[in-house]
Length: 191
Ligand code: GLN
Image (cartoon, rainbow, N blue to C red; front, side, top):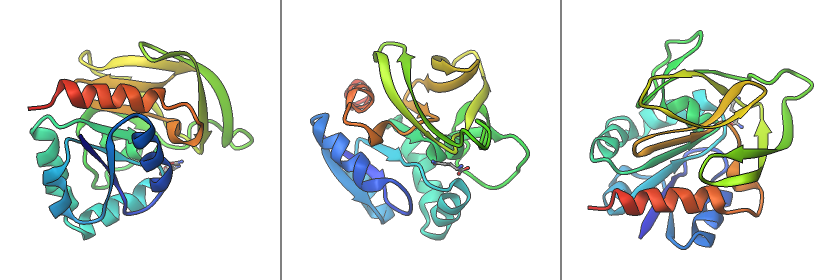
């Protein structure tokens, strides 16, 4: 099974390593033509405005929407979560807007811009070491969005069918359980 990591900007190599640890073949995706061979893709953390611009520049915009329409799973982490969200508080910038969530950027205050915490993530782990780097959070989700984890009353992980999103960076520890979960999702949605 081939799972891609959108390799336009951000934490790509770490996700590649985790996908392999979780038992799938990982592909760094730089061109739209690569999408056809994939059964799932990760949109990594980085800078959401930059990644969005590059998605447009390299013609990934419609291709990724089509990827999602085929019910191929997509996992957005941190900036990737922002890009997947239908609504970004305070902006109208162009982004993929696939998941029925409203998000806020840089949610955890200046002195705590980056921190680590053990989280309970529903169906995945009782104590997942989550790394937050200038992280967003999910303000709210529609009924069809399942909340998987909450930190300081803020939603930090959620799933909607074939779409998965975390505000934290699951690729920056040595625990592949989030990636295992995503690979399981990819198997569920396989043709
Ligand atoms: N703060 C970044 C943004 O708004 C996200 C940070 C990250 O991906 N680590 O895009």
